[in-house]
Length: 162
Image (cartoon, rainbow, N blue to C red):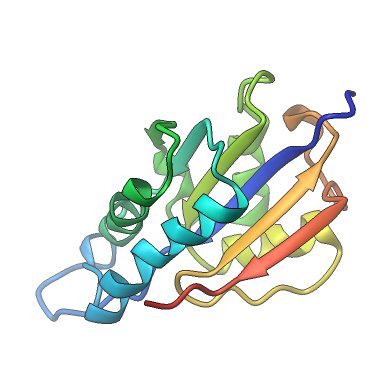
């Protein structure tokens, strides 16, 4: 363990629409989602600009959320689409996080509820509500491989709106 704080940024995708011809995986962002997603990026620029790695659900609404947020931050993090994030439980998300390379200090997971809310509650010990385009910024001096119950020593929440 080091004195440096690791930051885990959990982002729920922005508001999506429900077109009749799209299955859940392919749902696009709604107008509000397209407005809110860049605001997510602007919030990150102020509070977690040094993002090194983004792990994103491959679902259309999650991908598009990150595509609209990313240009707002100065960092150019590595981006990995991970099928496990779509429809993941908190425990499944933990497995993804445990694989983050130890050198990474700030990582983002872009995903879905209820998994993200459940994960936030697990890591903080407090109930969390993550509406669309909501952010939970969790920090801890512990390694990624040690992410578990009550891992976070600090938590900040935001609901950027465009």
